[in-house]
Amino acid sequence: MSAQIHQFQCLSDNFGVLIHDPETGATASIDAPEAGPILAALAEKGWTLTDILVTHHHPDHVQAIPDLKARFPQARVTGPGKDVARIPEIENPVVEGDEVAVGALKARVFETPGHTSSHIVYWFPDEKAAFVGDVLFALGCGRVFEGTMAEMHASLQKLAALPADTRVWCGHEYTLSNARFAVSIDPANAALKARLKKVEAQRAAGEFTLPTTIGEELATNPFLRAGDAAIKANLRMANAAPADVFAEIRERKNRG
Image (cartoon, rainbow, N blue to C red; front, side, top):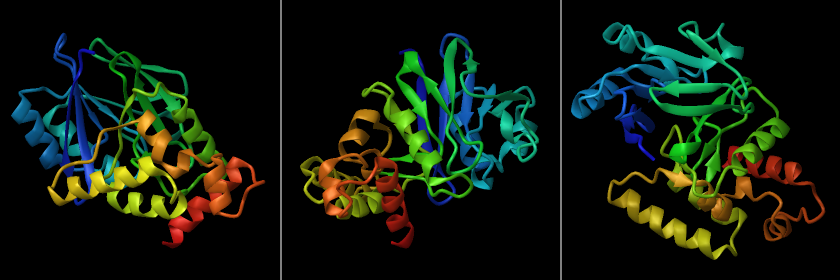
């Protein structure tokens, strides 16, 4: 792993993330939630922005693109090829299976519809790093705004199949509220209860709870555990398909 990854807060609960290749000097911003903190982070690190990797079209992920391009006009905007009409700044449209380069760093694109119809994820296998936008959160997942519950479940299963030691950066700091909800769905999970205590301590200390890992999410995130017998029993859905259990969990979170 050669990449340097720097995470910082934007807006009220968005994360800004920079990934930097020391070999070439290339630096990508994952999404563009707020120009000021991103520019400050670049200045702090002494890095030059060469790429903006967009996961989806929501304003809190793209609104700073014009300001970043004004400061770094050479920065290339990569984003979902199926959504160029809603993200007009995209210069490098990508789809499932495409490879994206940030200097010598290589990412694979996954299409992950559900939160939006064209959401994508960037997985850097050599760096053991995935930037998942608003599809997967620590102990949670994004709301299903444009896709279907079945699509969102399939997108999460795609991420769940990544190596367990893959580090995951999400778009928001929602972990504490997600953890409290997760315990209501999976109350017998000792690893989850221990993680809730850890997250409570982290947030009380003003610390970030990310990145997480795929392995940690598989052990504790109910949205990735919809096939688990204990969760199905707790929801009185013992004979239900995992996709239906996932939809029930998501609806409960929506009402919470």
